Structure formats: C-alpha cells, structure tokens
Image 1 (cartoon, rainbow, N blue to C red):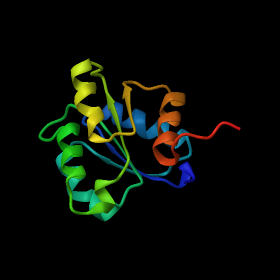
Image 2 (cartoon, rainbow, N blue to C red):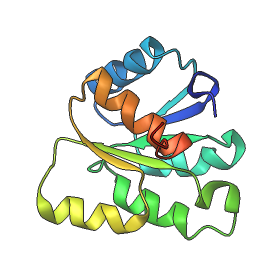
Image 3 (cartoon, one colour):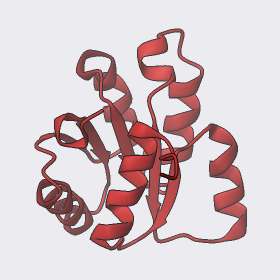
Length: 133
C-alpha cells in the first residue's frame, strides 16, 4: 500500500503529543488523519472510518490503548479487528510491552519517536517486511 494514501487514526490523550504525531505523519506525506483523545471515543468511530492503521497511546482514561486494542481484536467486524496497530507510549517497561505484543500489534515505539522510526514502523505495519534484493 502507498503509505501516503493510508487513512490513519491517532489515539493520544496528551494534546502536545497528539499534535507532534499528527505533524510527523503530515511530514511523511500522510494526510488522511483522524485523532481521538481516548480509546472509548476511537472505538465508537473506527467502524465508520475504516482506518488502514491505528497509532495509539497505552495509558489513557477512560479507556487506555491496551483495552481499546483488546476490544478491537475481539470485534465481530473484521474490518476493524484486523487493523494494524502501533503502540506509542512513554512506558517502555517490560510488563507493558509484554502485555501489548500478544495483541497482534505491528510495533511499539517509545515517545517521542524519531521521524525515521515512525516511518519504518508505518511501512512495516502497512506493507510487511521487504524482501532483500
């Protein structure tokens, strides 16, 4: 998939970080963007939005990223249950990462991510690993 044509949902409760991530995505040429400040509001909207990728924080209220992704993955709607997810969090503890990875996520980035790291995770999430030429 052409990454620049991707529809991306960002779920982040910190306004400064949300602005940073959205700006980074725009710098990568991704313009079809939607932002929510918690998992509950995003969960209500993603069925209609049909995103190609979700980038979500882990710790938010009233619904954090882990619960949000668990709800997504168990949805009967395969359009959202199979959506690639990248976690973005200041929490890099082994316990949190260990809880996130079994949810079938495409990546886990520590805040604030570099543009190169974000780009690489998005490319991997949307297109998989590239074969060596």
